[in-house]
Image 1: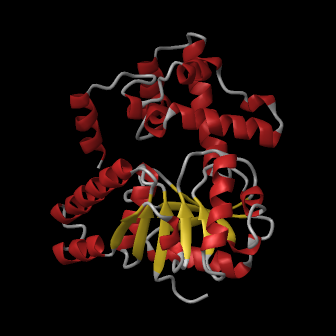
Image 2: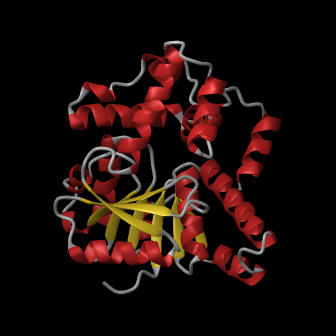
Length: 296
């Protein structure tokens, strides 16, 4: 496949906007799609601020920052993806919703285009089955936040071709990422290991082993993790963590992946983490912005 010149990214949230930013900073023309105009407006502001922060820290030149912003376009119409060489979806972690999107993209995208999913746990093989091009469907799991984290997990479905894999790997490396490859098993590599650890931290809290602060401090200072598992769960989103645990339990058929009742309770209560202002911890606006800036 020829070098990717234009990509489409579906989903204007934290992951989608981060992926769009990384691509445009590495010389790729990007169309970022979301049905919600407010989401696109927020994504535009977030990407601009992030790129200016990279410039202020001398990670990129001012000229490169300006060029990156010129390569980025926003749209609420999937038809604008007709000329895209590569399309990455970064929408809600729901198999049915993703399949519906892939059906639409399959009809819109040119025949040579690759369709990639940023899913962190859902079967690529099943997503590919909703299209007429299963050989050109692949998983491209960026870590959060994409502009900062170096890793991309590439997941091959049952029918993913060597050409599709090679093109995806080349695009990831062009974005400055380190690539690891997983076969299409529930949770892939990172979340198959990470999510049970987070779930076990919830069980430790649920059964009164220790306070949330001591659980997180223990893992930060005892295992040199930059964030404790409960704090990390809030950052990821407790709803996302619960969804992945359910995928692991169903896909691997083992009750050791059953979600902790406390995690289920928090999600049911709308305590979804930092994005809602409350999860395991409570986040006030001032402390939220301070913590965000200290992480970059």
